[in-house]
Length: 282
Image (cartoon, rainbow, N blue to C red; front, side):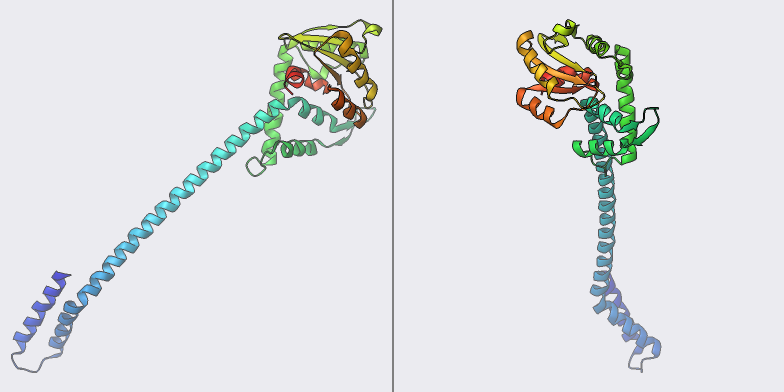
């Protein structure tokens, strides 16, 4: 700013000396005007320059901050999605028995094996809603893919352990032995009780010092109160810590209500791999 003012003063002196009493020409007047402008306008010029520089730097910093904010937000979204996928996988492992059961029941076939209805999509939506998985973070198509992958992996692991849920027999007595054999695959000591004298318990299994008695029901229709009553009576007779009814079928609302009031656990054959947690960690 001082330099501009000095230039203006010098120009003013030059004009004054050049006139020496003569009438100023157009050029002299122009130079005189420039000199006055430099002297009095330099603060404004410098101010405008400083403001422009400040504005440019401000815009640069704002742009950098926005870019950083967008990058951080994108990273948070990626992290949240990764965490939600892992939470979905954990939920599948935790509820794989119930999820497998519901997916299996969602497909209805007629007597000839043809599919009459398939509501697996609805079963998956119910699972995602019940476990609180965000569809915004894990879109439904991706969730379906993860569920298929995880369930397939678990099934392969179970088959390697000696348990294949799809190999369920069609005879009631064979079902009891199938249950006992499956439990042995998962570290249980299990045995089938004696036929008609089972006193409400078909299989007795123990693991890690804890014992459970199982009433096994291979039904084509819903399982009712009788099975729950038999399991409840068998607890005292066989002196087991816990009792459960395990079935390939559904349980009637009445049976569910009675089981809740008598501490009888209702299970699906899909729950066999996680039986210990289902029975002793509820």
